[in-house]
Image 1 (cartoon, one colour):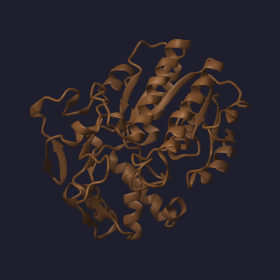
Image 2 (cartoon, rainbow, N blue to C red):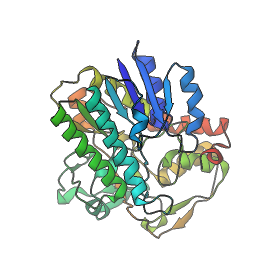
Image 3 (cartoon, rainbow, N blue to C red):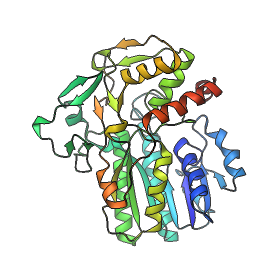
Length: 353
């Protein structure tokens, strides 16, 4: 099997590439990466040393795809993954859309030309912000927990299902990914291409290029270990907001199943997440850091940021039913992996910031 991985030098792309080489004998991987994300260049030569053909190029430029030979599948791991992209002063809205949507259009055209299947790593942030922001919650053991008495469609004790609203507003970032999902489905139906869309929870693990608005588990642990300033933002400044956690290595069995059985009649859009069992609040993460790395003071900033929500946990029951998939790496193991990484690479945040 021949596979093209976009964003291959990023955290998710590099972990997935290594995992596919390990678990798919005979696989041939080509990768493309613009290396614009600080830190991504550290993965370039190690991946090439594994026999991966990596092209330094940008999916926003369709000409950078012309010389890439045809493949059986495209795994789209390239994106600006920040929910604040386009409004944070670091990138413009057009740059965000060019990257996340324009790049997808060029990849879908590549798939049409080569009759390749397409798998998009999408995001939990395609789900509607207003019902999440107004979700009734209570604090249990330092973490928000939704109060489910109102019977919100697509919400249960297991988290958000694929039926939860995706109506705007969902942020410019969320909209760019939602539009990519729709276009992928249209290309699949119009040109008879297999398409799978995996909406991922918060990815985490050693080697992640952690930022405050993305890669929060990695950023928090690295910052804690270095005693860099940290603060709880919004929601009273208590750190009760909750996210789930997923190691990208856990996605690999699902990707292999999806590529090996392209005609399986299942829903093409699936939540792929660590789920309720993996979820953790910032204050709970701080407690883990205290036990593992020692004490550190966290400041409180009760002022909210755009697009913040108190609780986001995805329900991956449909992925289990369709593909017999479930995550296998406990959150504590993911956190310990990051802690060991920060101990071995104390200047990591300086490298990637």
